[in-house]
Image (cartoon, rainbow over all chains, first blue to last red; front, side, top):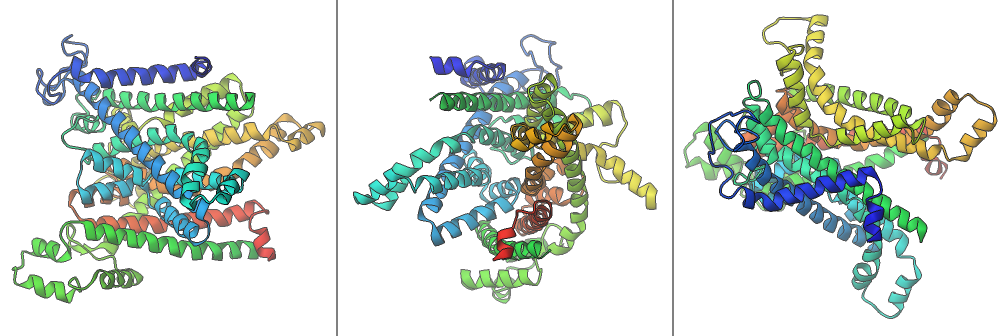
Length: 276
Length: 328
């Protein structure tokens, strides 16, 4: 309990926690509050917000309920953001551990591959990957992870380089543990904290990339996405700017919540480390 | 000078390996794409099916994967990126036509984000923990959370639709026959909104880095030494604290170039700016994989060149860099 209290000490962390809690509540209650297809026609087209209380945020060009779409869209943003970040962290941690622990040629080759992935703009890579393989939720997740794993890989490698000289690693070698077992059971878990510290930035970037991809029409066509809603609203930007602005505000709040909560976590662990 | 040259040579060798990996990666993506150059050619020219086998043989597409990779590399060595089906033109020609626009957009956005970001960072970092510091830190975090394409749309709604101060998109007025300075001014007014949309997002990054670096530098001994020498506060902030915090920002300039190129794809699409990014979107819409991969290769080369330049600049700014290599 004291960890939670310490986490909620700064106003920034409290704001971040509230935003994220609201977001998860939105995602979890979407099918309860708005059962049925969010892409079904619910009323007259282009109804402005705050006019009709059964459709609080109005309707889009085709008469779909904006609030229902917003709720269902939060699921895509959260799911893709979390899945892509997890994939990127796992790939990065494995590559970084292998490179740092093996050293020599393996290290050289893996790091040049990491350089290559950092040289290609991540968004262009995601664009190419989705357009070659075809848009679906899994492909979008993989495409985003492809451009995001290099940061965690570098951090993991640097951490592993310092850990592999420690005594308990030498001890594990002496008792005859397999090098791969040492790398993944002894070294990797101890190298994780600084890698995990990157997670909030990676989740935020993944949510933004997903939004940009679906804005360009490369999201999963069977799902409501905030980026897709902004693109839809763009066609009537002059007459109904609210259709683009509302999902955009939701995106900004989400990403901001992730950042703020992330900073809170880093600060909590930093305090705990300096106390111990 | 020799120090910078030695560093440049070392980086150049590494870059060639990196580029080779990128090329192999794009080749694999090209192979994974449905259909090949012959299918695309037949579709676009409407040629008869009897030619398919003949063309496959003539273009070397019936050979093994390794031979095809060798052919691909050989063509790239001659700067031949292939033929675009959607534009019916050589890919190199189209890319060279679109590249300057993207370079202007990126250059201006980088200048805006780096200049304004580091200036605001100095302002915030001059007094860590003060009200203005906290305000700018939270403000920049909020700015960093904004999707660039959405910021672009909001700017369009405010400045182009409501106020009508600036054009809604494009790179210059159509059929205006302007020349010289008048044309440059016309292009500049068209660039204000896209450059702002792209630059303001990254401004936050430089601001936060500058601020963090300064907060760190305040605790160093040389600041105490400068204080004890009785230097003015202004001088300590600018010549000692800010100067030491500036170096990592220069490195960031290079690292950021890849992200900025990615960001320009959406921004150029929002503002209908005919650059490399919009070309990428057109390639996706037209299912033109060779064109898309040509753009990716060009961007990779661009990012490598920018990072080389940043490394050399860094070697000039920081005498410690590369000193050991030059001595060896």
